[in-house]
Length: 230
Ligand SMILES: C[S@@+](CC[C@H](N)C(=O)[O-])C[C@H]1O[C@@H](n2cnc3c(N)ncnc32)[C@H](O)[C@@H]1O
Image 1 (cartoon, rainbow, N blue to C red):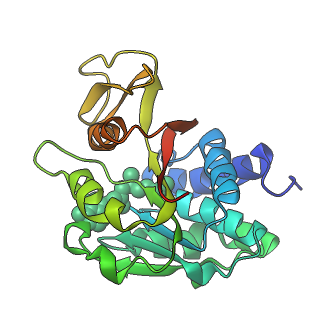
Image 2 (tube, protein in one colour):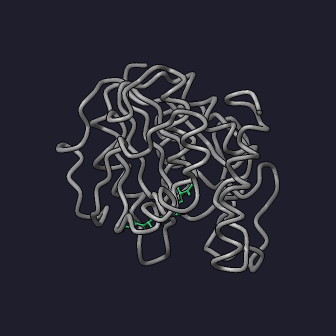
């Protein structure tokens, strides 16, 4: 059996997703790969948060990874809230994809709190309940749908001291080539002169980091930064 939290451990987890998804949809579930899963796990363990808020659950590959990290930290999984329009896919995951992974690793995914809601209508004041929050942000902006702008203006000022992790950087150090990705993407510049390409939502986060001189961190497939006191 793979060592808890290792790359092989997340390979096994991703394999469970692929097996189910292949049978049902004829293709792999691509939201996380073992490297990005391990990156999220390591980031969560290092952040040691008292509360985790995930924005964008879908089948919950990231949800499962963060839960594994919270278990490693000895935290009650009820400190995690995952927001999506619907948790039907997440219910499928718990029923069909991960029972073996969950039971062999003692992770009770049923403890994670879920909120079915349109993110655009969620009031962060009713959600944020700790000074040490980790937010995992994974909704894609579209030209006429900019939830990332709402996150930056309404959520970040309320995060006393925490980490914001944004999933889905396309590539670091290379310009975006139009037509090569499914969603809108832009070439972005951080003030430390890093250049990378990412989905449209990264523009909002990058603008905020540049305006506030906030350093940027990376894990495979994402960026993170600190807000508030920490
Ligand atoms: C990229 S997926 C999340 C993938 C997931 N984090 C994972 O690693 O498996 C994005 C999710 O955002 C959700 N979403 C999109 N717009 C939303 C909105 N306005 N409010 C709530 N959720 C939304 C979609 O339903 C979808 O499940």
